[in-house]
Length: 349
Ligand code: ADP
Image (cartoon, rainbow, N blue to C red):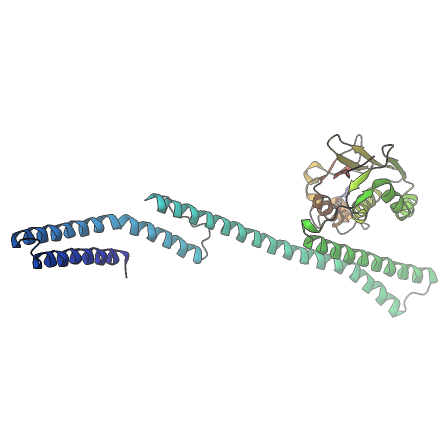
């Protein structure tokens, strides 16, 4: 039943009820015949006027309901940007507001889902590409060995060494990807704040870099404050961040360069750790993008030794999980200075 018919029916029932009452009053001689006729006529006239008024007043209500209905229909048909005009009675304006809010949040969620979908697709495409490169190289070296065309021992060994180094690269890549996916799944409340001591973490890391440093004749200088710095972060996470940044500094440093690791305390209980190298630096336009997954600058892309472009995104995820910030700036002279902030642990001495 339509709203209009429903209200007209209610109107008719109340008029009929008044007329029945009048008849009952007449029956018990509470009103005269003449009074009954006048009162009856007045009731019918009032009924007609109120039905007419209902008819007039109901139209804007119907229009408001129709507008919201049409809006819902458009959203259901996939037109998520559909909104309803804010007109009519206060309640309908409120309804329109709520409807529009609902539409806006639906639209936003839909956009987020779309963005996540395309990021996922891009991730898979990049992963496939990065896995294919070492695999293809391993395949071609293995085929050459299988063909038996290599006769001298040195080449034979070199091919085997290449296959081995490609498997190492592949393994590192898979490990990085695995780490990235588990980081994505972690939620804030899973972050335990176990303090790590910065210098202990650096000392533990040092042996991993000595070969890379020696191979390029690099010097590593560490500048830490006198007292030990305890930070609000799991040691393995701090280790991972530093490892990724130091590995990059080594990778992109020129031979015989200097790498400086420094930490300074900020008054507000925040520690800023920085790793400075003397490499070619990073163009200003790329300083944000290098923290995106799989992003490599053109220079790094053309390099054989370049990584997959995941290291910095892992570092960013970890730093941000603990409420810190990460960035890169131009170092004095040449090179880049990567930095991140982390909260000092309570009770630091
Ligand atoms: P990758 O494994 O390729 O090094 P990262 O995520 O660690 O991936 O770094 C992303 C990109 O940022 C690198 O490919 C490189 O272009 C640039 N980059 C990172 N660190 C440095 C650095 N210290 N000096 C110059 N460029 C750097």
